[in-house]
Image 1 (cartoon, one colour):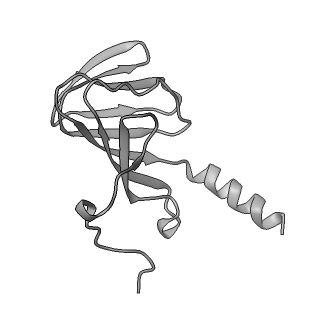
Image 2 (cartoon, helix red, strand yellow):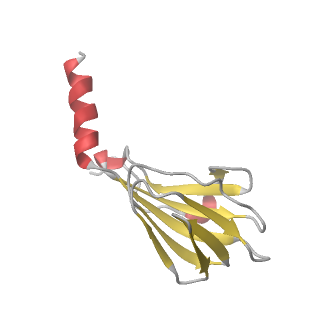
Length: 128
């Protein structure tokens, strides 16, 4: 028997605070679920909202489900629309802006390095 919910009714789950005001998320699959090395979230941005430019050590993939936006990715600017997919490598500076009048909704997938996770796990076991 699995120790996690296999079917999530996302419409019944509340939105949680995201990286900045006006950005919210709903977790779908988190690192703690089955010791995964990935995270998947539904993310929504209100009209006119800008996420602060930032970097991660791990790659990410964003899939635009609805809305329009603008992406700054390592000094390049892209216009986003429904159906676009964005691939961000670890270390790349990126930030999103909702340029439309409706919400910008994206599926976000974060892919963590299994070697880093294993090092943390082994360090924790050695400390016991």
